[in-house]
Image 1 (cartoon, rainbow, N blue to C red):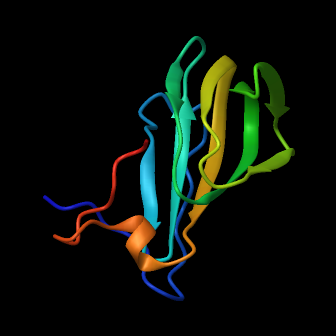
Image 2: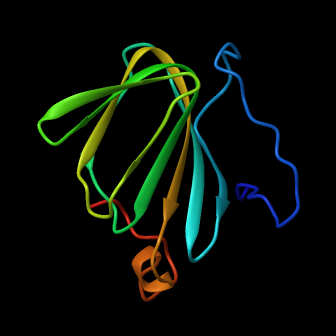
Length: 122
């Protein structure tokens, strides 16, 4: 079954970190942007990678560490940060984290390959 992505004007319910069945999901995907709800349990991590996109992180609840530029930047509920295109980063959950990650592509060619599939991280 294909994942449901939000349609323009559609309200989507976000998951809460306390919901033990919550998992990371792509909320919307278009040729110019993608928004993902990242659910990370305590101790979870995502290895270093990057995208040809500006990336915005909004932490809804919990706490995570974003590694970049040889250092670590903590982000917790109610905080936001963004990264320039091609910035390599990694994410580690400190005590569980619920983040909204939005990738803003400069043009559709940055987001998809010739077959129309979304590009993998670099």
